[in-house]
Image 1: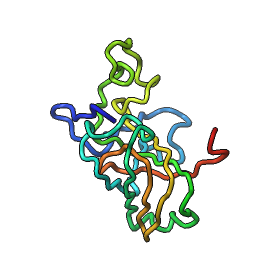
Image 2: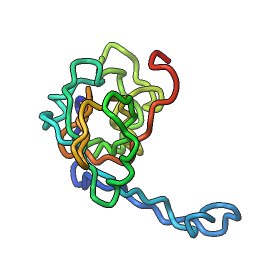
Image 3: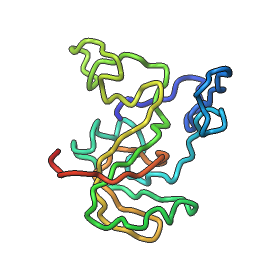
Length: 167
């Protein structure tokens, strides 16, 4: 998450919606032909306030944080228990969406590499993937960690980890 900044003039936060292309026979039938829309289900509340404070990966010394789930999605937490490993999908709202190549791990001695071959937060659709453990559940809030997401990061979804924890 380090180095995550906002491009001059760009509005961080919501993904830019692109109009659906017309005339494609099988596209968009289930969504009424509209472009995909994301609705955050919550937000991260963390002691990390800037990209420069955050480790590049959660396992590299990231703190625990609270995931606050919005009321409309609170019932979806049913079945989660302390100790579960879950995957949090986030919208990296301070990422640059115009970056296509980076030096992996911000190491300029490494060659430029396409962002799809890296874990860089700067990418066309800056979706974060975070494997965490549930430490505590308090109504519509989950204490999770470790997680490198900064305070205010929108949460798109929560998924259970399936399979052995060492896979």
